[in-house]
Image: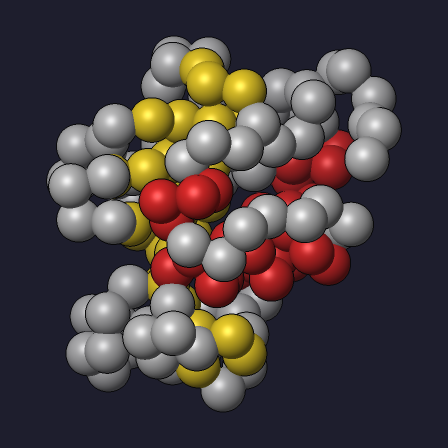
Length: 132
C-alpha cells in the first residue's frame, strides 16, 4: 500500500487508525479471538484495525514485530505499534504518550480493549511504523 510521506502526530491516517481503534474500547479480550466486537487478542486487534485501512499484518505479535520500519519512542507518532516482546504484547500508540490495546481477559476497565495512559508502563522492545 502506498501512502503519503507526511507521517507524524499530524498524519491524518495515523490519527484515523487511532480514532477507529478507540471506538472498540470496552469490548472483550479473547485469546486467539479475531472479532473487534465479540472478542480479540492484542495482535488480532492490531491486525484487524490496520486491515480496515488496507494494511495486511500477520496474525501474531512475533510476526508483526518485523513489519514496517523500526523507530524510537521519541520518533513515535499516533498509529505506530509498540511491542513488549517479553510478554508478547502489541499496542497502538495514540500520540499522547498512551496506547490503545486488547489486554487480558479481566473485565473492562482492567482488561478487554482499553486505553492506557502510559504506553511505556511495561517497557518496550520495539516500535514499528506501519504507515509510511
